[in-house]
Image 1: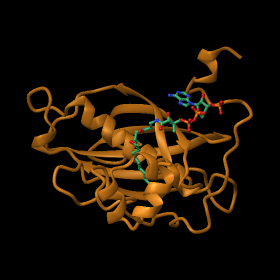
Image 2: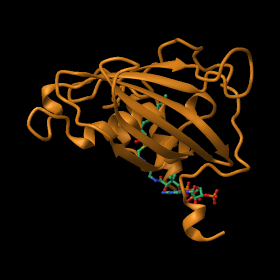
Image 3: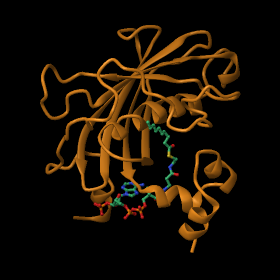
Length: 199
Ligand SMILES: CCCCCCCCCC(=O)SCCNC(=O)CCNC(=O)[C@H](O)C(C)(C)COP(=O)(O)OP(=O)(O)OC[C@H]1O[C@@H](n2cnc3c(N)ncnc32)[C@H](O)[C@@H]1OP(=O)(O)O
């Protein structure tokens, strides 16, 4: 395999789709903020205030993959403006990142975005509401392949964007090693844990 294909967003043929973790929220339930300071999902000034729920686009029953999908909603506010009266593309990418990034934690521990590809299909006016849906397309080792679409003003409104992404599963050490100490302490990490992770 060449380096280019190893890092592709195409789902590998030997990827699987595991079931939702038993402790994850159920289909239809709201996904709580993963960090009280997150600019994506927490209720903080300057955030995009994304609200997300577990979705189910794979039918009934306990089959693998059922409920490993997310539905999100974001109000497109004046302060997200790029072109006159239109959303800045970075805000649409942030919305995708948040919605897509909420999928893998339904199965596993923390994941971070390794790669995110967005197609901007139509302009998004401020004053509208974005509805997003993301689903798990496959898992291979620590790699979670996900895809999403964004629609305007309702779940079956006009398509304004699509995205594919790769999230890589990381352990607590990732955050202990790289995050700012005061933010880690605010969510319960001890100074000793932080020191130990940083060697
Ligand atoms: C309820 C929870 C809701 C959560 C919502 C969160 C939404 C927001 C999420 C984010 O925005 S996270 C912040 C943005 N992302 C980062 O800061 C990540 C920065 N990058 C890293 O920390 C590391 O590069 C990373 C952890 C992604 C990978 O480093 P590692 O050393 O752990 O793994 P490694 O490099 O060995 O790669 C593991 C696999 O992923 C593949 N890979 C890594 N980066 C890739 C990439 N960029 N493109 C394609 N493939 C990639 C890599 O080829 C390899 O594939 P194989 O298993 O097949 O060998």
